[in-house]
Length: 210
Image: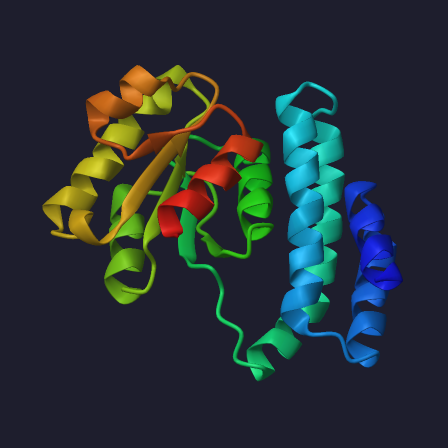
């Protein structure tokens, strides 16, 4: 359908000011909200594949993700009214002692692009804050933790341990990432997954919530 093709193209190109009105137009024309969301998810998948192949870079991913966010902001009321369920629920944050948020924000937007509802706790998030959130939101089945400094990597370990100590480990999957993080470190602290970039994180999140 032409309008969905246009929406995919505008999302891929990061035309944030155009995606919202296009989504509204598609709704006004009677298109199913899920069909509209699927078109944007497909666009983000294309961007993710291009990033993995080295054909585009972080700035392009960011503008595409922002365009997707502008579209989903318009779409959310219609999806809620129609009873459309998200793929799953995720909580994300940069761990205690770390103030970096660009990578975390990109991962959040890419995961949202898979149809996941994400709550962002921000930066410098204490282990207890993740525990409190999970305790209050049993529907949340995925935790995404970011550390961008070698000095804050121990906070990843502390957060996983806090979730274990709270008796919540069995109800969630835990993803970790960030420049200094490795698969070996993820295995060492007992995380379920490590991903090297935002595109891979989005794919893994969808897989873990499936």
